[in-house]
Image (cartoon, rainbow, N blue to C red; front, side):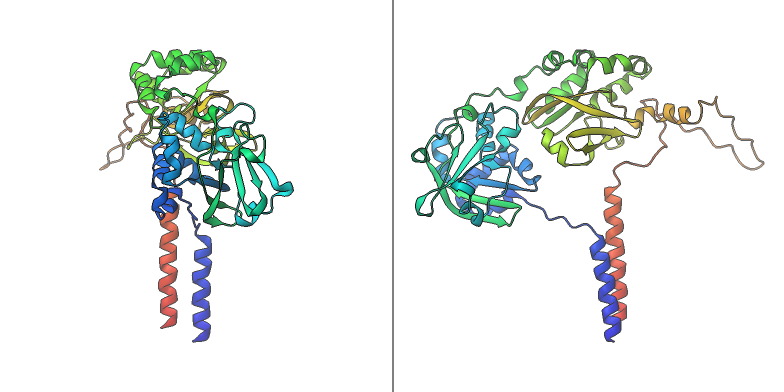
Length: 405
């Protein structure tokens, strides 16, 4: 009996160990348990900053209660300026209760997500933390604090702590930063094609303008979050002949493929490998790509090739635009050409000989983009893997239960 029980438990543990476990961190859920932070929590969601926070592995959030938020809200900042200020309250490092009181030389300067946006000149994206006399800990924007007497925000309590990973700290007031609070234009006010043209992507911008419906799709997605990967002029020039061979719908799909319907900072792209959807993705068409980082280099891959991010045009949440060294080629548009090229570009295949009593198989109809409906399996197989893992786990549990009987 004991042997069977041990074997059953061992089998269950082996399967559970093989199934990936997600230790999700959700800042809005954590703060929702503390009503005094409801205003701060609301604006984390309204500015989409909560999503960025949740995707970080090591982070400290400096939260302010409703009373502490009143002073800033009275300034009537735009939602985009308020977001910059909130960025300053997210430290790109872990500071738990013990570390706050054991700071080397009693003072340290820490980078924030505001610094990571690229919109903070000099040290304006850094926060100074100082362990003061009497056990107090002061916080201030590094560019605004010249001596301890100028601190106006202090440590109140630890709200949430996962050692060496995540920390949520309450401070008395929002930090002051004229740079972060400066008027910031709404992303929708940007002329996307003009911005791209000024940064070496004029040819790609012209292609967007030649397809008004595509350009509108880009514009419509800005406020909700948009990332654009624009090939530099030389890359578009080298791709011209292939682009001309596409159908009108195929050209639209390729242009839409260079945008994703959510914001991704460069840091997010560097730390989050995996499949991402694009503006061309629909319920019936899997226009996805894979993001892969290699140190400081980020590569976008499809089954038809890869492109590297070579620079940043703009990175101001919820809009990010990056330059690419090559035009992205979705497999859904180029798989026929790729397959023929790999096979040595053979001529048209002969129809199979008819057999008595059987009809020759009908040719597969091409889709609207000039692509057949058959082909490689979906790149995004994560759902299938998870389903398989759950099935295996269920089988092992049943087997274990049988062994215990």
